Amino acid sequence: GRAPPSSVLPMASASYDHAQTSPFLTAVLGILGIVGSLSLYILHPVAGIVFGLLFLYLSLTFTTLRVQADSEHLCVTFGVFGWPAKTVPWTSVRAMRAVRSTWMDGLGIHLVSNGRATGWLWNVSGLDAVELELKEGGFFRVGTDEPARLLEATRTLLPG
Image (tube, rainbow, N blue to C red):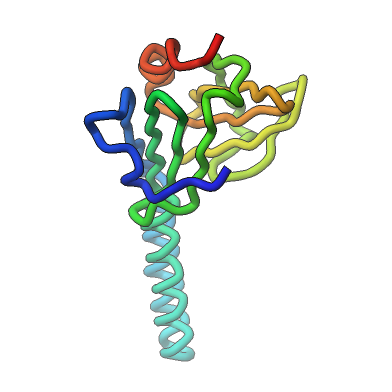
């Protein structure tokens, strides 16, 4: 579903609120941005500036993943802008479990398979994740550096 801005869950009502940052992605995007923009700037100043701004945007957007949960839904947002974002109502979740992604599953936002179904992975760092099995089929996998804490904080929120 479409998610509201990253401030949608006030701290008082959120049963879980955690942001994970990827030092690896920050370093890679920073190095590529600096080297690429300086190289392009020598050839064409405008292209170098545009390239640098693009990598600044990518770094601000895709190096942090924030996961929030309240009594109604799970909200996952990327970066300082709170976009991309996804909201999953608890009423659409059949089950939740801690899983370990493979290195081939990678980082970012994309489709992956768990051997039983296909679903979306949102991840900025590491292999640990929480997988939400959706009632309409498929799953939504959220990378996290604290899967046990996320499960504990949300275990009572699933209906039934």
